[in-house]
Length: 136
Image (cartoon, rainbow, N blue to C red; front, top):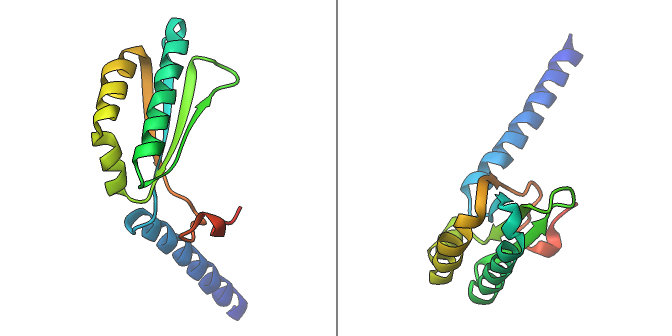
């Protein structure tokens, strides 16, 4: 009976610790990370990729708060694009989404080429504050 109580308590503490870490990651000053998935107009993929390349370049050159901005093309479907974006904070992401080049490139030029879009907010599980400290 004592072993069961001990095991239950140990599992409960592990569960509590994991949930506290997830909550902390979602609410603290850790990076603001999103995954964006686009389904593009198949006839205009080249044009869309050019615009995505431009916004990537502008973002990386002009935004100190942007940690990563990767544009990824699906191997299975060339009209499907993924963007992995990581910012120092949610405020840094807001700077990005309010930048004049974002509004010009993404909202005016790229948006008409997008058939569907999905944005998922994610958070790193093993982030330790510096990219060199991240565990894989």
